[in-house]
Image (cartoon, rainbow, N blue to C red; front, side):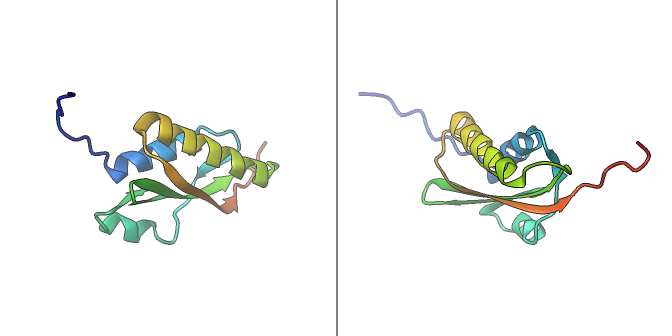
Length: 116
């Protein structure tokens, strides 16, 4: 019989940080944007609030909303799919929680530096 040592609880803020850092590491993402629910989700204890990320945990699984600004001249559909795959893999591998969905909201396209 295996002895139970206790429980491990992962804060929604940790999930938000994992999602944010993973998203920012994808080529083509300029920065995170502020989503419409970002400020509200910071006030709710069941949701995590990280800039450009909204996390919801229900039924032991994670739903992620990402709000991003992309670089010009990127394929937005391919970029969104890459973000979804990488964020899902990061949460599953680092935290061990199943991911129900990852929704990517492209809020804007970064302007090119006019002085170049």
